[in-house]
Amino acid sequence: MKILLLGSGGREHALAWKMLQSPLCEALFVAPGNAGTAAIATNINISPVDFSAVKDTVLTHGIDMVVVGPEDPLVKGISDFFKKDSELAAIPVIGPSQYGAQLEGSKEFAKQFLIKNNIPTAAYDSFTKDTVEQGCEFLTTLQPPYVLKADGLAAGKGVLIISDLAEAQQELRNMLVDAKFGEASAKVVIEEFLDGIELSCFVLTDGKSYKLLPAAKDYKRIGEGDTGLNTGGMGAVSPVPFADAEFMEKIETRIVKPTVEGLKNDNIDYKGFVFIGLIKVGNDPFVIEYNVRMGDPETEVVIPRLKSDLVELFVAVANEKLGEAELVIDERSAATVMVVAGGYPEAYGKGDVISGLEKVEGSIAFHAGTKPDNGQVVTNGGRVIAVTSYGDTFMEAIKKSYQNIAGLHFDKMYFRKDIGLDL
Ligand code: AMP
Ligand code: GLY
Image (cartoon, rainbow, N blue to C red):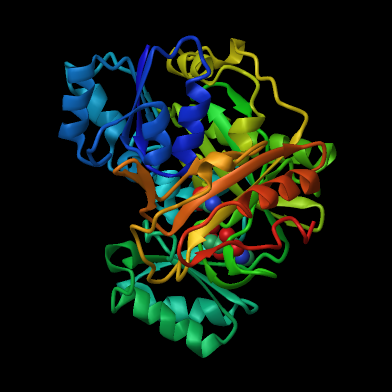
């Protein structure tokens, strides 16, 4: 099969690396890709949200399947675009319909879905410009801290957690009345604060049955000891030491099964990944959010732990035969440490030459924000390289990643030195 993968991050390099191990994968194109995918596949320099360019690419290269990495094209309806186009309708897209993608694209849609399907989540209410005063009133009924979420996609910045009531009310006004996050905050979900430890759970579904992939824990803050600004993710480990078999069973029974049942009962066309952001409160899992794609950098530890043929699984998803497929997981732990550009997640430089990549041994350097430049690899984003390793324990895996990072260099390179230490 000829496969087109959309996206350009560490997630996509990991997906590409895995798909290329499949005998079913005859050629792989990545759009737009990075220096890592350029080294193993063919990059196509188009934007994943430029659907007509995606169509041209699919027709020019005789693509048999499209795998969507990031959420943007899904929320914008790429699956529906394919279904409605007579030249593309027969080509499967791994990624949900636009309606299904609202699980990530609209916090309110996700909350309604959770409540309707009796899936444990924080109590909430939602408000618009016309009900801002009721929203301020609702805040007074909650215990601090207050959780305010812009309904729509806000590049990962739309969630505010505020301990002071007056400040929370002011921010609610900023979001609803002054459009702090533009259209994304035309509606705001206000949620009860859940106190616990977070983990990410990943499901592949054909809309009828599902496979539960390994869980992972991601490190979101830029600073050591989980301090400073939120990032896309600075490292991850899988499996998650505090999610034992009993807890995973609770996740599957209380959350994963009713999620897939809910999709089926509502006839939601959903063929792709569901990433469930969870919080462990006491010994019980609660859903914080759904994403309609894999996590990044979680993919860089989850996918390497998959022994099964990923393309075979995608074909099963496309044919609604996932129930018959087999999922085999590597028992080893995997850990990844993200190497980022100095300044990230605020302003940072691009175009710095990365050296030492050829010396990486016993780890996998998944490229994120990189690009090829005259035979060299240069930085091209905030998160630059995710160094993934296996180990009998996650500490062993992390140690190996740090040993290999020691041989990497670019100007103002930064990484957290405490990944996994809290566990
Ligand atoms: P979200 O975009 O919904 O994942 O929210 C971003 C982050 O805010 C999460 O990863 C949590 O750390 C935090 N968060 C979101 N909702 C809650 C909640 N109800 N209680 C506590 N923390 C939350
Ligand atoms: N690492 C979190 C995410 O991919 O959203």
